[in-house]
Image (tube, rainbow, N blue to C red; front, side, top):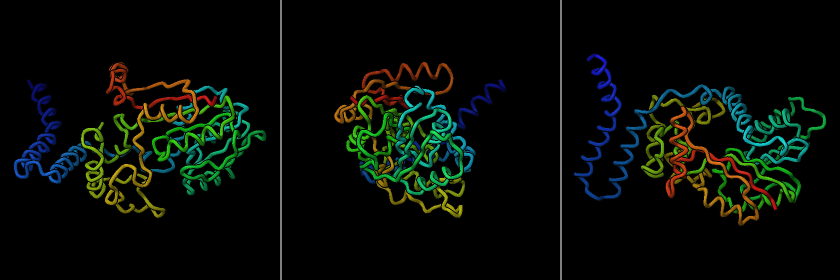
Length: 330
């Protein structure tokens, strides 16, 4: 009996915020009927209440930049395990969207490329990568450099690389049609683009789970509601800012969400889906030699369920967490 009472109390604790949100929604609906502005406000309030309830203390890697760098390097090296070393060893490699260089350095140290060029549009990241490069020791026959790029052009010569890597950056490319053509231009015939990407329709497509820890919130609520709820969450005293929310002095940055009206603002997320990606890649001249979808992580049952759901017609992509892709430059 005591176990049943305890279980009921746990269930009640879980559904309480949803009940509060539902009552708030019903109250405002009765008062304002079909006024769209009020519907947006109601949905924002619901999203805020649920997000606040689900908010948990952040992982150490999200508040300590040094821990994050170590974690990021580890995850990228594990991501590389999905691809063949033959695409790197003795090859000329372009690391697109390299950030401060964790993947570049991992491959340069472990996979013996001939030449690696890291390119990013963030000058601060490129400067940090160059600083790190000046302090580490690499094999004499491995050449590494970093270049500052632009949103629509690569600072490299035609047909100068065997392999191009795009890990965890495709969703931030705001001109994919142009960039795919640039990828094609930079590769030699027979070269490959190797991609790890989280498509927009997946459960965490907008990359906002630190503020809105609700899977498929962009589907349930839409981007306007998510942005307004994020604006409110960010200002909460109990919200712990992540290291990307801090300035050079370690102080919390101004609330950027207050000025955003869409995910495309400030080149945040491009909303690219898998069919559009495939069409643009083929239009650029690539052959898609591999497109491998992955669904939920976790236990075996979760993986089986996710695998089944992501193969459903029409809605399957909503259950794709990430994909591994190989594009062949013909």
